[in-house]
Image 1: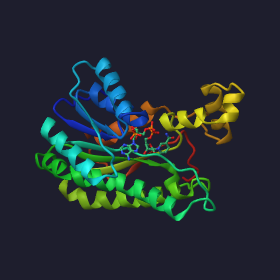
Image 2 (image 1 turned 60 degrees about the horizontal axis):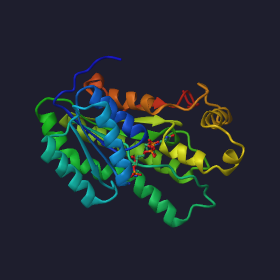
Image 3 (image 1 turned 90 degrees about the vertical axis):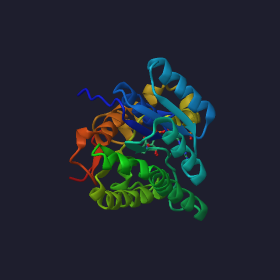
Length: 272
Ligand code: NDP
């Protein structure tokens, strides 16, 4: 791994209390950045903060409760970051979760909830942190936004119809944002992930009554799913592997890249 010294820079990771977000926060801390994470569940957030502080005793870390769909929460989170660190350099829009449902069983309300989550989990934090990103960019320093998106944006799955559709829309949003913000030297990119081991997959495993009854281990369960889903690399991705791609796109390592995405799907993408 290329060593990059991010001392003095501030990385904001929404949904940084678990999975990909937590692994990303850790990478930024390792590189010396100040890090702000948020999440809704106070216990999960406190656990994440404890873990990060144990591993990085000198960490400049802010952990705030914030639902990215709540405009007031997001404004308060941005205010807390400004008060604590005085700036923001990199925003990682990661908070969220997927929805398993076919067209037949997705209600109007579920469609609205899914579109709301996928769009506004990007729109609200982006709007709230833009003033700080702008002043970073005006100082000639790296300013960036990176969004966690899914390969479903390009390769929809009928059993995740609403998520797939919303992901495609978000890919378009990210491209427009990149073009609009490029003259201000704020880069906007995303990663398209396949299946990454994380909180949401752990919960699916724990709720799989058949797997629990059969005494299937986590490794057996994920291995079987990887085979069923024909993942060429034969396994789920690790949160750290998604985090490394996010880190690359957020930092000056990718200084000439905007409006782009990196595939982190273990080879599942079928298009060229
Ligand atoms: P986790 O469940 O491990 O982490 C999700 C994080 O987001 C948690 O910190 C959670 O905390 C937070 N979060 C969720 N909703 C909100 C909200 N409204 N406001 C603030 N924080 C929120 O899952 P992953 O690490 O897998 O998920 C990260 C991103 O990757 C998500 O956007 C997910 O949709 C996307 N993704 C993941 C895939 C995978 O295979 N893992 C596949 C495709 C996309 P809390 O619940 O306490 O708020």
